[in-house]
Length: 399
Image (tube, rainbow, N blue to C red; front, side):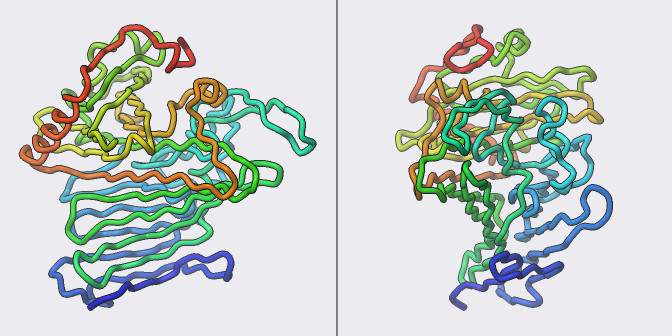
């Protein structure tokens, strides 16, 4: 067979929405021997009421995409390895129940429980004040809440595509608009894809300025891991030029910033800013592995598209949210005004598009984990690593 099988689940322009739908080997025989499935459901009841959920199961890796929440990925499972974490926010939350300005701009956390969630598009960092041009052409001070809006905006178009020829790539396409009159008009066009039987998922994102006037862009991928990959003795492997603490609290443990403890009641989050190195063409990778190196997950991306990497450590008790975040981005998650002054905020001309491609792989043997470690070690040869005990004022708004 050749060609592509297509099915549109949501299309706002044509008033199309499908409540439930399934395609699998029984309805679309590919003759591969893999048991695979793509299934769309609409959740009901509680805070999840009205949330669309799409499961992509390639026969080895299963992930749950949430079109209602900016095309984020709620959870995953690879050959029995859970991917994601257990947040105090137990259910998927319809954005209608999230007030981003709650608790001084921390309302984003009321829906935060995904494995992979985007922060952006107009802003992606800590809450704070910023200056914008209002509808009268004057400067106006506004408050920017935590991590932006994109994770709480529903997709206007969702489509499933399946390649009928080997290696039979399954792709879910989504379009999410973050727009307003007299303000930013940014469009996220995403393609989340995997091949049958593989251990990896690819996210290919394009962010386009729909206006004629320039617009700013900030985009961060909050990739969150809990048990079993995260545990006492787990570690981060990353090729870096420098690593530095965000604040005095993180400063105390800078020497062990790449090491993780077990669930610790009362633990206060620690954040570290990395300047990564990588291959000469710009590609780089980071790895989170468990204590004995028998399982892990790696992120692969371009430093040209996403030059900055942040490590978020929150190894609190299990009930309080035992998690760490690996965060490649177009900037560091400081207040937007600070990042703009540091020259780390992208400006898109009218109609211009910025691309961000992120591949996530899962490794379930020591051999696979060691293979990724060797590749990262080769990248590290391109720069001598420096651990800064000081807060670097050029990287941290606290410094």
